[in-house]
Image (cartoon, rainbow, N blue to C red; front, side, top):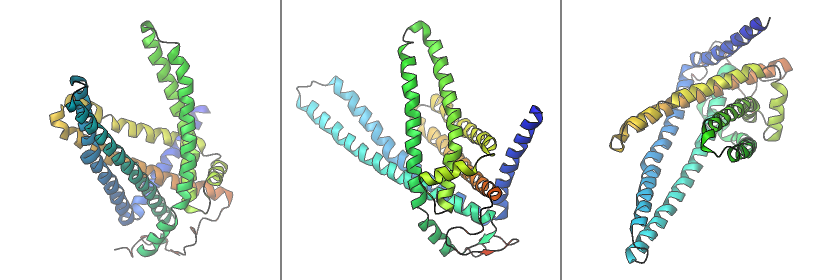
Length: 325
């Protein structure tokens, strides 16, 4: 019976992935536009990092390395030190701008993907103007919910560091380096697996905060309530998406080792490829959680025909955004 239960669970996982894949087929125009929009925004963010922050880090590192070779009492040393401080301030400003823009792009992308997936899943038609209004009206919910998720995530990984610290102190001898590495690896895997389990409620609460007038702790509580019975399926999905992103990211490591700094274009190209694939995986994961949201709500007798306060026209056999240019 155990084997059949596992097979049934795997079939359900494959079924949900297939259901999410059908969203692209149901409305190729909208979903392709969303994918291009998502990749373009992340691509621009990556270019900002490559063209601005990366050179600043390189210049700051080079100038720092010059300081130990100079006489501290010389005017040249003070000039070099002032140059380092100026470059560090510039790096901090650039990093703050990058972090703020990155957060806005991430939040906007999540809202766009979830709404597009929900409209496609429900076979609902909406004008482009109304779609933009819907996006602009939906930013508060995921913003508040993501703040709580960040707090929980920070506390969770802080707990990891607290548990890891005494392990490091008790394994300082050189002879136990292999044992220390094994302990850290096992602890990291266990925490990563449990984080994938916690992320079920986190991801679902984001979808709820976008499609409903519920956000923050209420969205987290609602997600924990409606997800009962689907946790094993979504847990396997989280592991699948996590391994997929991790596997794709490994492309950058061998390329970075093989090429030298004069051939950094190859590293940037490989990183850009990983970014493009990763954005598609993240988009597909959000689409899957949107499908999971409707499947979770259906057994509870909830009304999901209307999203927020916007009126839609149900067209079961019509492409979603035929009105879109």
